[in-house]
Image 1 (cartoon, rainbow, N blue to C red):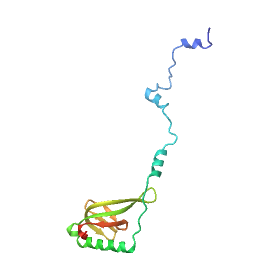
Image 2: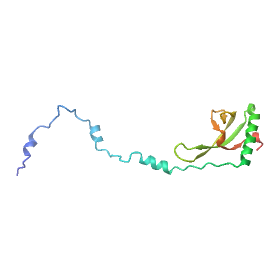
Image 3: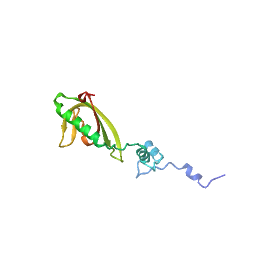
Image 4: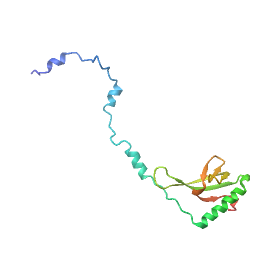
Length: 138
């Protein structure tokens, strides 16, 4: 029982003179799974991430905040410790999240419309929804 290709079994293994021998690591990489949907998982995670809508304050709440800003400005040299709750817009989708910063108020910059905290945090005045602290008599 002879096969028509039996004569090739006795020939030496061919080694290319043009192409170097491939490493086992590179050879194995050829057979690794192909990710046709690259980025799909991150897109799904981004879509499922929840954001909050910004609360619009009424006039009475805005007036209360203005009074509290004035109290902070009057006592800024005393380095009042305050708790600021503010809205941080999301960079990728509509909405955002509410953050709370606790620290010493260093400066109220009315031109830039920010509160500068002693740790260097800058909080835009327009997104603040709540100010709390001993300075307000709470």
